[in-house]
Image (cartoon, rainbow, N blue to C red; front, side, top):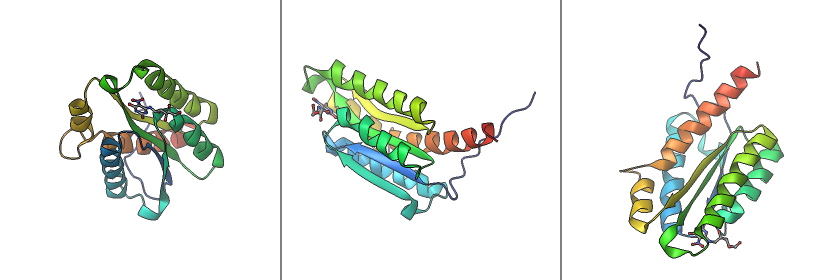
Length: 155
Ligand code: INI
């Protein structure tokens, strides 16, 4: 068996972050965790671009623009949709998730899903906190791994 190597080495990679301003007390932690992990993996801080959008619903369109620009090896989508705060939770969360997945499939650029969907603010804070769940860092790992894996698979 041959295992295809996808090292968590971010050297030379360019990564776009898209973050929803809605629940920004959560999103800023996600951004901080993602940026710190990217830099720890060797991505130059100058090669990380961050675009803020109004909320999770807008995230896929900005992610698509980044992916289609050809300037990024991966795009990381960040935000928080909290059930207790919105009667249209399912629409916002569902459209964000499917739009993010579709963007990756349509463009061929890895697009990572870091939009938290939780029942409570506390759950969102715990998952985003860089000292606890650090979901932003997990998304950075997924972005670098997918960028390396796709490069290897595409030869
Ligand atoms: N956007 C979020 O990112 N999280 C939410 O919890 C949320 N709530 O609660 O409604 C939310 N709504 C805004 C939405 O993403 C759009 O920005 C808005 O509908 C304008 O298109």
